[in-house]
Length: 304
Picture 1 (cartoon, helix red, strand yellow):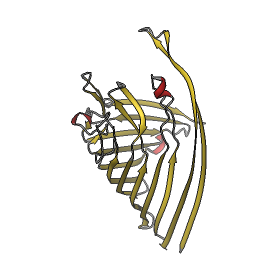
Picture 2 (spheres, helix red, strand yellow):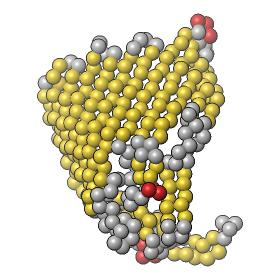
Picture 3 (cartoon, helix red, strand yellow):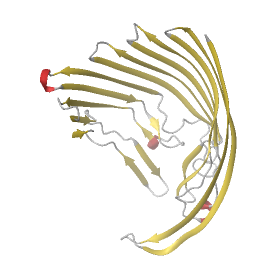
């Protein structure tokens, strides 16, 4: 059985931006006026969508789709100069092509999906460091594209035991990004920010009956992502290394259906690799962010 779906969405978005920035002292008390004013802009877009599906049999569905997306422009509410506060950034537009398969196998015990996609971005909205301004600004890159593949699997092995496994590959590149690090410092051909090539996630859960004492639910999940850059300049200082995280939860479902007790541990491996950074060589600053350490949480839940 075949089906075809089409649609067209019209968007008109108007934004009024009123800003009133103060100079504050170390006690965070306003001491003087910085900048104040207002600006407004209207953006319009027509975004189509079309898809075709083929239900080859009760357990196998194939699809292909094309769609356009639109993210309206705006203003940088962190700007501390009047000219930058009143300068709008342009809308972001993306054309997305996707095809894939969805299968339900072994009497619905296994669900498996695979998708291949391609995204074409115009005026991609980005945050970048302006060495002249000596601060972060919000603006647009010219063009970018990404393509990749995603695979998802979910299996119910028994009435009590289920597992999930998913993975993906992503190629994401700036095609045209002039002035990413100031005049003459371009990012053409560099990887998009926060876009690891490889991602893998998995999880499992098991329900353990306790006779008259309710039941225990044991759950664990893990995820891995390869290295990525937090700046379009793709400098070594902008690179966050590949890292893995493991989390676990034990939930006691008490005989009272309104009461649960859960013990959860996040970042079991105590991973401490850098996840983000801001590098500004002009003032000799290199700020780094790290994940929360291993954390345990005991939760008592009541429900009506």
